[in-house]
Image 1 (cartoon, one colour):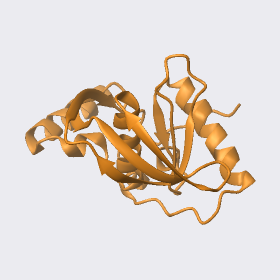
Image 2 (cartoon, helix red, strand yellow):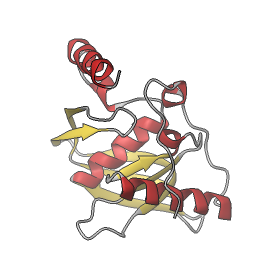
Image 3 (cartoon, one colour):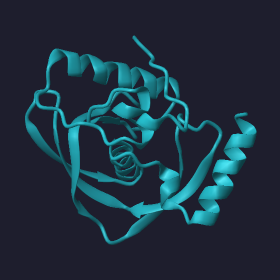
Image 4 (cartoon, helix red, strand yellow):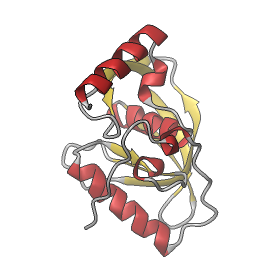
Length: 165
């Protein structure tokens, strides 16, 4: 079990688009395992590669109540989003102690490479839909607070700076 350190905001890797994964190898599977260990230690419902300094399009999501059901994804992309939105309090281990209410589609269909290296498609609803969208944002170099108005974003970042020194 390896819990990796999450990069502290404003590390520039959090603003960098992650590189696509060409194939799923044992090294990739090992990174996913570390990502799941890191996610569980937070505890959280998802983690993207660049949050721990791995600049590959890798994500894990587990919104199950019993845990241990993490979905491992390489190169996740949203194919379809529901019109209906869901508001959820989002946060990130890269900016500890901060959170904000974000509205996102309630359900999404995502295509990705699974742990066998095969193209997979899955529907995510509720907390898992929120989490997979949040992780894809990370992989694109975006943070959840980028979805806030400028005023709310500036307030959150000022508060974080004060709180985290």
